Amino acid sequence: MAEICNGFDQWTNQGSSYPMDEWLNGDTWRITEADLQAMGFSDLARYIQRVGKQRGLKVRTKRWDYVLVDTPHGKQRLYQSLYVKALPV
Image (cartoon, rainbow, N blue to C red; front, side):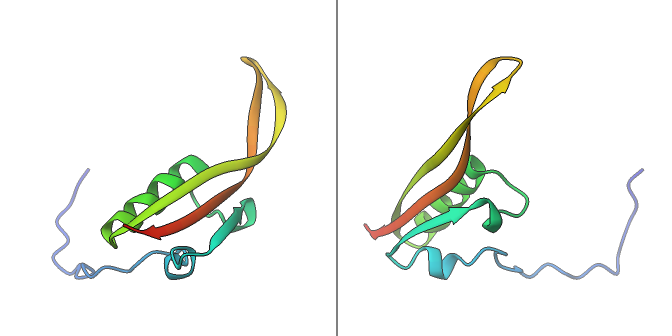
């Protein structure tokens, strides 16, 4: 059940736990599973694009380097990297 917490005062932006300043510097970056924290490549790609848009950049992302795995729904791609490049608008 929800409760009142008057002592909570952590409302400042903690920033991203990902190195967005590096990944959005204009170079092409290859992000691997070792760089992932709590989200998959698809969610991370959307997040990077949103951050880039907020910074006035156009961000291109591409999931790549996959292996095929058998699933109950047939073979599916399991991506192992995400390429990111930020460009000025």
